[in-house]
Length: 559
Image 1 (cartoon, one colour):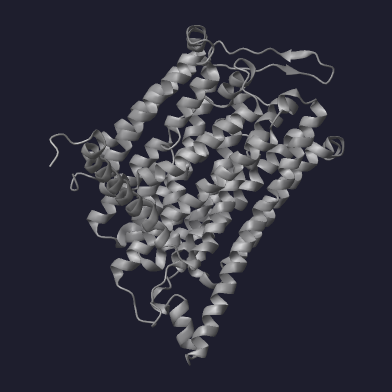
Image 2 (image 1 turned 135 degrees about the horizontal axis):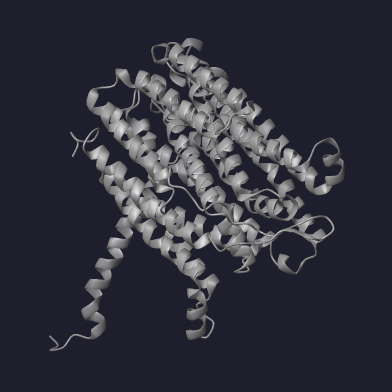
């Protein structure tokens, strides 16, 4: 036996162990997810994919507003508030989906039509601005398009949530009921795959934008407009993808019906095996329908009324209505489960209510750091790719940790990763560029910061989605998805209100020229630094305060 082992042999057990650990991790987090994939999952995943691809026009919209419209950062923040409000319509519509389970596909077609109209408005603004402005000012067309699209996506999202429940098999190939644990696991898998589909859509968008915006900084204004127009034309595929998802669901159902008929099952038995049993159909919840429709009417009246601070009034009224409906809906749950849901929703609400800097930071990056369309697309590509990877990396972390633990980690990470944004404003990139031979410039810092930050934002919603999929009453899955999503999405409305308020305190303006080329508004980014610091501090304080309150109230028993 040799006295001395070779270095290769001495490291072989360590290398083998490392490879086995990697293989085990891949098997638990990725391969296992792929093994659980079913053909019935594809239709809702196509609707979610369409929602992810909806971001295709995001960068174009930013530059369109900057180059063609004279809208302020404060106005855009106000518009963002109204754009978020249609998501609260998920309350009555979600309950209607549960009630009209057989006819839910019609909402997909209606949503696709609204999305298509929104995209056609924007493409016509780019292709024939003179004709469109003859009918109505370009700003009004933009506002109309901005409001139509989210209504369409809300309708499709509601149906997709309902389709995820329907996609999970309750019987095996021998038509025997599956164990409850297996059904619960399938629901969790379905929700994870839904998030993967959405992020995959944003990843496809980022790749497309990087390609389409290649060399755009050297193009003339007319050539840029042609690129913008082609992107809006490609975006017309979005409603088509969701329609194909519904068509595929109908085809798969017809195949199952023929299979069961060939085995000798009667029509009533086929309906029982493939659809919801009558015992799972909910009764009409008039509180939910009335409250949801009352909210819609309230928001519409206040939106059209010339009342000071009407956005704030709409938010306060909407939040009161949604909280009341949540309380009514969850009365049938055990107290512990109810408090767990309240605590989870409250913490996630605070995390998502953190304000942003608004459009001013993006304008500053474009004007002062020379970030063009292609580079912003590259940032989006990195964000999407690493978010997708992060969902796999954090899958076990989310399953094994409490919501407060998850939000604490995310909040601390997001706060630390906001520091490079502040440092860029105060010129740190000039120092690093000078001392690294031009390697660590503004774009390098932005890329690294985006790479580290990107997986964090999307993770917070998954614990609540998993809770609904596993614990909400079977006959009210779509209703629970809708009401809880309406509540959490109101946090984004609050975020926009806070963003609007901050943009009033810290005035940031970009350069605006009239048609003759004369500057009517000069660029002023001097107050952006203070805005960035306040946003970072609020991003730390709001979630931490919510966790402190939740741990001493709703989540006290589960600590």
